[in-house]
Length: 376
Image (cartoon, rainbow, N blue to C red; front, top):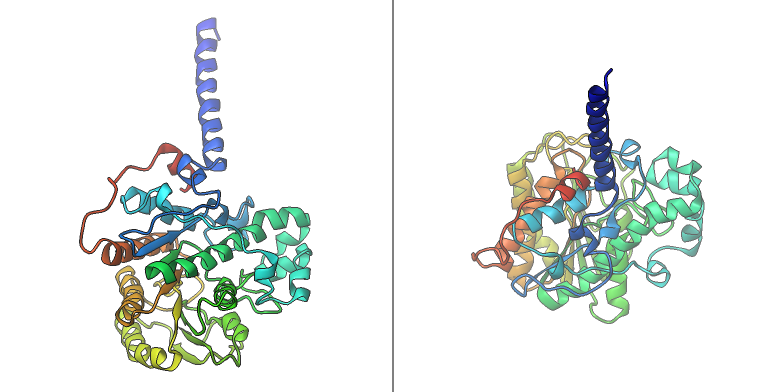
């Protein structure tokens, strides 16, 4: 090879290395829009009515996590970036939570259980992810447990914001399988229960209603509030899948495989008035998992994107009509489309309840190259 050929090869290799380096940096370093929502701070409710809660710290910072569990670890970021693209939020308008502290977690979880979280082997069982057990405890805490503590802090903050503004959406949370004395189903801290107990302890509410429409029963939430007459738990879920056995909610409605939009919505609308009458809530916490979507690998219902958007709107509208503050958390969803379904649902809620038919408060924008690399 002559000198010219060597120079061409050198240039090509240099470009290749630069591109590879940029890709690595792009996928490991959060873009500016996400760095702007890392430190706890206040935000601004859209239209004074819809508060969006999110933190860059919700990310499970453990390389390879997607290979040991079907959960999309970048789902929350994708939704956040989409809402920015649509002009519905800006980083400065988002409320950024702090993590839930030990005293808050102890409002729901036992000291014995919380102590087991120092053991990677125990955490691996709760997450149903065997490879986790070989990791150092500090790595497990920083990479996984901290993310769920921030999500719990987000649901607490969303509860306070819902009381102030009417509607709050935590772009995360919904870890409804965590019990007072144990975790399971990728759920470590039951953020719904922690938030309710925090609001009760602060004297902000007395009665609460949990509406859980994730395809899997909210067994942990049911156990957290078993025998408590001031918290009503309502779960609509597929009956023949995990968890087995089921816990006992105040009202459980089991669905058969193949339940579609029309059937799901008819059942939901039939039960909601009864649920509100029985619960008489000061606030509603809504677990809006979208694993009811057709073709979800962990379930067998047959809802469409439009059906899930309508489902979420039905719950929030029921709260708005009754003047009851509502918190929405995102829960499960394991298809490649799950994030986009929930993104459209949250966007619909913002447009409906925050904009009153008006235009988006910010100009729509394209996704930056860094964002494309980071949340692909």
